[in-house]
Image (cartoon, rainbow, N blue to C red; front, side, top):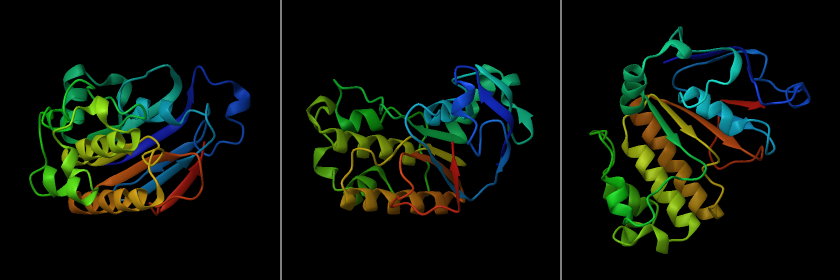
Length: 211
């Protein structure tokens, strides 16, 4: 599943923010079965790019293509199919229902990938299995981030989009999360695109681009 960007520039970004970018205003082709890291300081459009790829924003110039089709032409039904089967996005704000338990949040998924680790197995790897029946509002941000990641890894996907996936994790938990991400992507023969404030990361990449 190939993603191609042609002279893509978000309308809200000032010109000064894109002059040194390796993505904005350039032609970029992101291949299947690769791991790509997007590095930039805050305010350079990391979340914006992921939201464009996920069909949540259309305030840009240039074009974004998935499998040689302009995403701006996709119907609501086409996006729904992509969200269910092809794309999985970990939002930076996590978007968990605070009044529900972690398990209830995970069980809201409309479709679960059947050939990978189970919900319980993933939670055990991330050392949060004992927290499954706790209300999300009682969990730390690091614990919530791990549950949000499990939710995204339970889905079918060809592209896993992760917005600063280690921002609330200590080194040990970040390494556990990175290994689980790698395993989940390999099982699906899928690609990973993740954002970071730093060049260093526990998740190795095939390509690192600056925004």
